[in-house]
Length: 339
Ligand code: DAH
Image (cartoon, rainbow, N blue to C red; front, side, top):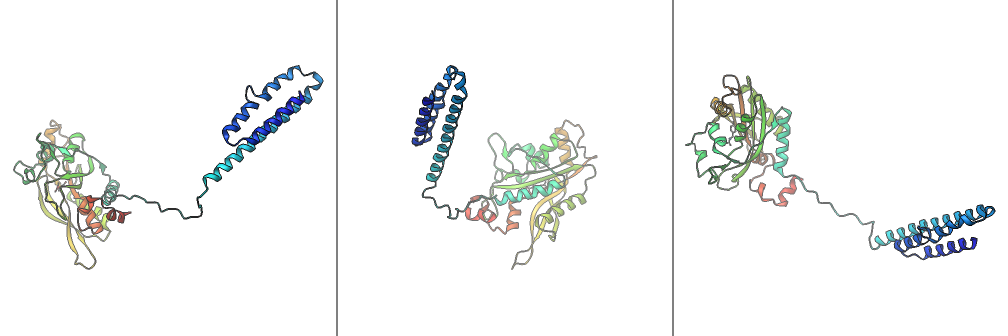
């Protein structure tokens, strides 16, 4: 039996040495150490070895198994090293790597994130509403009568069903008040649509950010403080903000907000950036009716302010973008500048 073990060991070591890939190495392992392998089978013969020889034969078996296992591991490592070396052939690892091309956020996205983050710090929560609206939410509930120019077919995209692409995000004010009781403090960024002639400052789709705050005793002072703070956070603490009386059907009093724009080499000038005002009691009445007169928005008990700003306009001011069309053309040369 001793001779047999030695022969098996010698044969196994030779076969392992001759293996050229992991497959033939595995075959060699199975042939000697597998369930029916030669060494496994000869080990079964231990039973018949006379007592006084058992120790010596056992030791020999162990030596053989250890030698074979070590040879298998050594060969496996050798094959792996050779494979690694081969896969690196022809590759110069000392060459500098290729530049990574990072994408970047669209300027409108950057601006929207910033606007949201400023307003969230002041306690405004995000709200949303559909872009395909009905006339009630877009106009009627906002005290905008049927003969108001904004409702004109020439200015608004209507569907045959009578629905329309919302002309402003103010519709989200209505939807929010229908579904939540005061106090509400929400902002709603989103797209709005108008049949505008497209030029350097007009698109038929643009981006607004609506805000609404309704509670007991909300005052014009709250409105001014909130928006002044907002624009100073947005454009710098030195920014001058002006409230100019205006008219919107859904607020009374109403204002347009201008920000003083300073461009190098140009005289400073006021630029209109938003509309705002105190929520018109007629809007609360409409909400009240829509809420089956539950009184949650009783104009004798609550007041509120609202505002709507054009995000495209803010982006143009912020980065001195001269043509609004750049914001939708996806020209990488333009977009890369915001990386
Ligand atoms: N919806 C107005 C527009 O698109 C902007 C606006 C003005 C929104 C006054 C308001 C507001 O919430 O109070 O021109």
